[in-house]
Amino acid sequence: MTAAVPDAVRPAESDAADVVYVEDLLADLQLERAGLSGRDPVPAARRARQAAGELADLGLSRFVAELLGESAPVPAPSAVLDLEADEDGRRASYEVWCAGARELTDEVWRWLTERRRAAGELPWWCGESALPLPHDSVRRLAEVTAPVRDLSEIAAAWARPAGLRGSATAEYNWRWLLLGKGVLGPSGGVSGGASSEALPPLNELITLLVGRARQCGLLPLAHKVKVLRRPNTPSMVMPVRLPGSSLLSLPTAVTPVTVQYLLHELAHLAEHALRPADAPLVERWTFDPLRSEGWALLLEQLAGSTAFLARLGIDEETATALARFYAEEERFSRGLMAADLALDTDLAGCRTSAEALEAASAVATATGLGWAPELLLLRQTRVLHWRSYLAGYAWRDTVRAELDSRFCGGDGQEEGEGGWAHRDEAWALLRSALARTGPAGSAAGFLDALRLPEPTPRVPRTHRTPPTP
Ligand SMILES: [Zn+2]
Image (tube, rainbow, N blue to C red; front, side, top):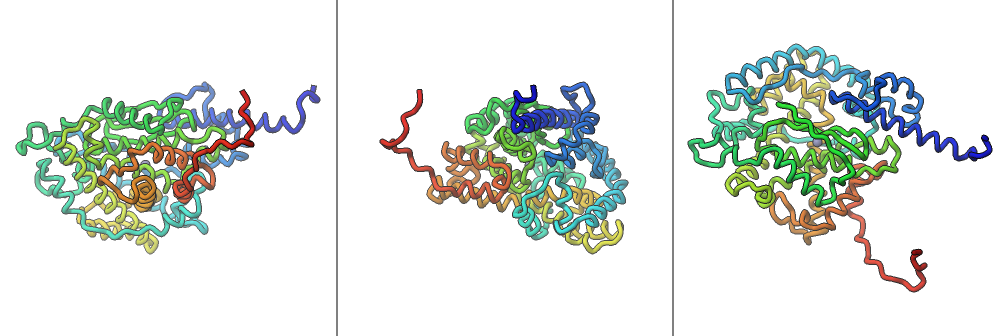
């Protein structure tokens, strides 16, 4: 019987079976992490132990250990910040949240110290990634800097229409402000301006934006998306099978940032959906954070165009207020991340958690927001993320300049929604750049793809082999 299958074929067949087994395992691990049941009744942890050899061969051991919660857990507060309560309720909720962060201070400091101690040649925050990061992107993330600015003026301007009492820029309001709750004012407010009820309901926004993503070929029908709605949680996407299916988790409330956040998550979904099915499994699961966040920032920037917002059925007055807010929100977010990076630098000279809190206080003062230092310190566990965003803004601007010069003769037309977004060829080019994986799938590889010469139209030649019927 053995002679029936040539020896050279058998290992490949068994490898393919291993890959499918590991794919199923990864899918179940992702579902279980999101609190959903996997498809296989055998616990994923047991299957992961059984498949240890295959996981190691595929370069996925560390990634799976992280999904199983076996790597050093990232300190995180258990309390959820309640954003829907009145101002007194919000203040109380914020106090609980701060107290949780205060209790975590020593744990956060130990976690950071351990990561810094374990770092080899690469920066310590590379340890936050379970799969290797492209060298060029690591260099860009390490080099990114931004000045710490006083953000109190923007915070005060956002607080006024919300009618926030007392110290409107105080820290307990910051997340409220960042979510744009005050931007449009309450319905029938004294200003008589645009109200938050002028925004489409969440279902409608999802239908419209997913429809547009499908039109641009960003979200093939074959990629299944399950929407989870969780109150007071950040919006996020989690891959389940690449390509194949993803989870999209959204907060239940619609705020002015919802359009922008939805576009951002659709960008991540597109990246999942466009992974080539024939690429090695580890390549399909490896994402360059600079490319991922930069691309998401490019797509979410479309929301900065009043014309784009009008097509979502948003009236002119509201669209103008939203577009202005998105520009301010970017300045504000970049300012916060500049503070995170400044603290990352300062922490290198700290020896104790008390010194770390002192450094965080100094940075908080410079932002003019009077942030609780323990909250700023807690954000250090996500420095890779903040660096990816901050470098991602610059990368996004380079990508946009490329698109403008290629598709609009160098004219960035309307602020926010460049003319390139109306060109099918631009979306085709973006799709092909997004479908790159491996070494070509880095932020630098994406730019290379955008700079490839345009394909010349095919001219029929006489010596070509006639097509087979
Ligand atoms: Zn993102």
